Image 1 (cartoon, one colour):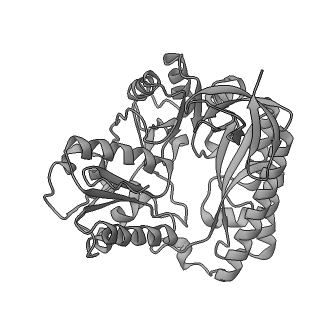
Image 2 (image 1 turned 135 degrees about the horizontal axis):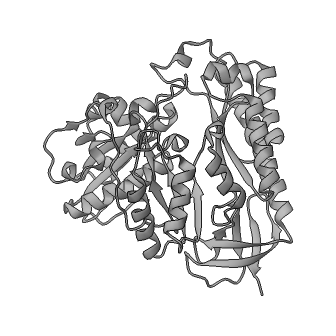
Image 3 (image 1 turned 45 degrees about the vertical axis):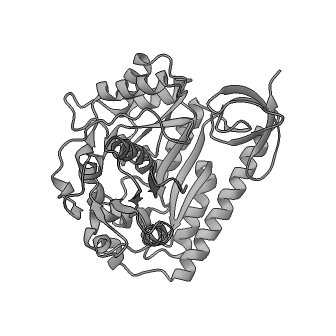
Length: 420
């Protein structure tokens, strides 16, 4: 969203929820430093398209505000700082570590401040009082990734896996609840690896149990994308038995064919994914699954793609994030025999259509039920399963949680009225 007042700092964010959280940290640093007429572009490197969009936004920002100080940061800037420093529109490039340090915003010293992120050993906790324009807050619990999926360049933008201390996570959550947030989302790059670098090696589930015990006024807790094969026993028990943990799990699946998963260097098989979803649904029947899926990975045949397409029904997936495969330089997958780009696009379209049908069916199944809805605007909110709901004749306040009768639906959302 463009901020026209040049006295304020505008932050343009691309990519993941972690980037959204980090953008709020940067906004706080910039405001504390008194920066005027500054635009911060927080980039993503997950696909070549994400980088193209970031460069386009940088050029547009310069056209619209020719005198602004433009700072570029994020994963794309961390991986290839020279490319962004070489843009005439850019005043400064900050790395992913430097962007989180208040000192980086106290005065422009070097045009490029990007250190070797692979040498970073810990992740400091960063407090935010809230997230601008949002009714749910993100709390960073982990950073970086030790895995080396063949298609992914993100470990080189984020560094090794490292965890935030449980005490700091609890303090952040408590502060957000005190500021009126009813729902918190735990986020990171590979959050199911949480705790491996901390004393005692607590698991993600252990941390979440302590968080819920220590912040009893927190009404709703969500977790961002997880690796199903790494879900620990404590986390599974919370999924099964903790009503404050929302029944919505987003899975990092990527494909539904075992050979493609092997070539991706993933840590699960197709049967692992199917069995996990069935196991969760047996103990939490109201669970809703989302998933990341890549179409047209190198060497993917029609038969292999059909296995991924069938995974939508076999796992009972509802919310799909579909990506046509995008080559990333310096990754092993970029050297594998490619699938024609038109075929990638066609397969991605088929996956998206399958996802749209699954969502439409899920929404239709919710009609006639009632659910607790967190309002995002005075008239629209999200159910516990993250379905969008339009509330008729509503005069509510964003951030309210209300019980709603779900009366009908469109292919994209539910319609409801406040329960009597």
